[in-house]
Amino acid sequence: MERSSTTQPSDGQERTVGELVTMMSEQVSSLIRSELKLAQVEMKTKGKETALGAGMFGVSGVVMLYGVGCLLACVIIALSGAVAAWLAALIVGVVLLAVAGCVALVGRRRLQRAAPPVPEETIASVKADVEEIKERTHR
Image (tube, rainbow, N blue to C red; front, side, top):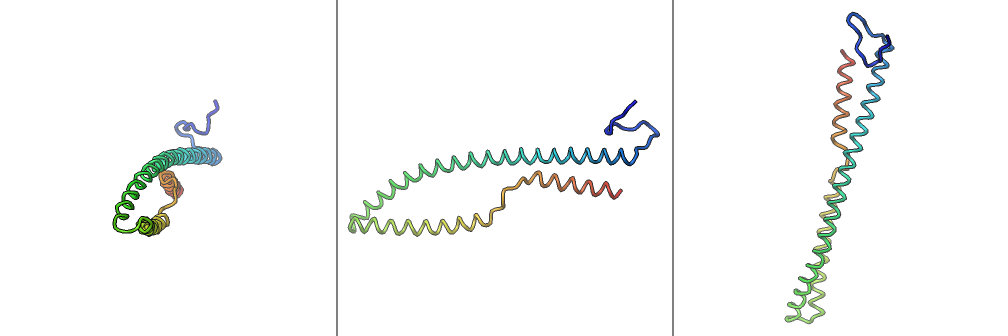
């Protein structure tokens, strides 16, 4: 009767070193494949969420652009009652460029602080696996 390397020996039998090494290599190989699948699924899920969020953010930006354009036209028309129309447009344009510069600097700082997108769950799982293997080898 043959037994595979994953079956338990019957009572009173010890496994040989060769069998133990074979079992370990099979289990490590299976573990690595499982961790890679987990990383792939996790990154795919994060990618889909990121794409959907970016698309929605883009649409909202376009709609906001039209709204801001209407409000800017209103401000220019209102200022043109006190100064020349060209001067009103110049004032509004300079203020907008200043605001855009400030927002760009803040955004740049935020991007520099952002962590790179990594599969955090997979990394934690692999670290736990490594610790478990280290503990078992010391026994």
